[in-house]
Length: 222
Image: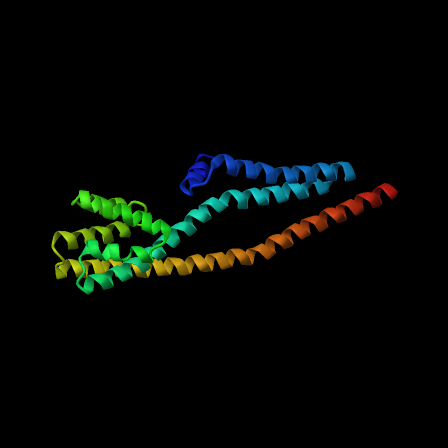
């Protein structure tokens, strides 16, 4: 549960509110089970709401990790797009600070907030620290390498060697990011493909319980 709470906080969600929604949804299965108890008495049918609740719990709690992965993929995708434009500005003679500032109108709200913090820190701290702090919001170590290479461009006044280093590191990260995005899309399609199988499994369980109920009734008649 600690890991789930950390994931909820990382997403900027309210843990109490998320727990409340989980309890509210879980109560629906309890109510359904109680209703089946009164209608049918002790029966194998009571396994249906229990099984459905287990499936719901798995998908409800595991969705946080999927949301974090989706958010990270979105951040990486925007990083690639953003610094593709950045490299264009650099090659057109802009210095690093000006190139970053020129990209503010094209950034999302999240990227704008991170970028404004970076620009503000650069004004007061001429070391590599602001660039590393910007990269720490990303899980991939390659982002830190790219940002350090940008700092080296600042430090060396835009030397060709450091420009080539930035292009090499950024190009590698861009290719890797696109590959991961393609794999994530393929995994999502695979997950969607499993949903009909899950529905079929529930239907088979329900049918099995019905047959068992019929067989029990036939035994009592005999």
